[in-house]
Length: 79
Image (tube, rainbow, N blue to C red; front, side, top):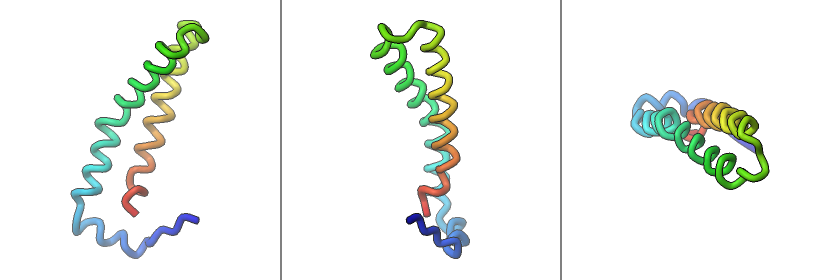
């Protein structure tokens, strides 16, 4: 089970560097990584299986779902 120590949240402001690095990486790096992986899988690996319109939709969906999940979970990784 996941146990969160909410009492320790007040100590985050004492050492904000790890929180800022995690959030910064998730906002600056992760969407581009997800876009690259989606292009690799849907436009290269599954090129023969998917038509071009479906490829575009899958890339957009992977970017939206993959990008939002990592950004929303960023503060939880530190706890």
